Image (cartoon, rainbow, N blue to C red; front, side):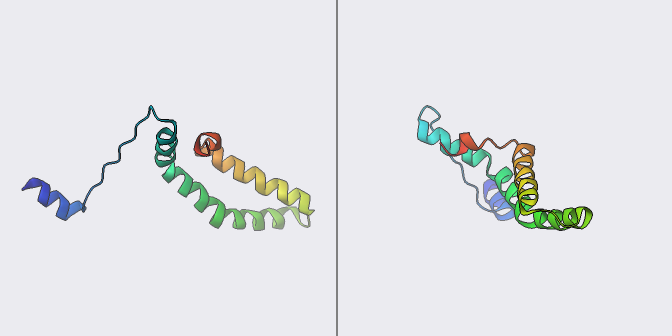
Length: 92
């Protein structure tokens, strides 16, 4: 009875199982564990980095493409590091 009430209130639940002794499943586990961090980093990069670039160009004035590219990639790397995302772990 309580399980039915919980399901009505919170919706159905799912349980994922990973065999961490298996290399492929361990990699899938790592991806699942970092999915929220990845989504957050992608949101930051996709929506807020453009604004940061506009503000940077307003402050610095005209800058070369190389300077702006360096700034953009620096911000992407910073976002990845801030979220403790290890790309090597997630792409194995």
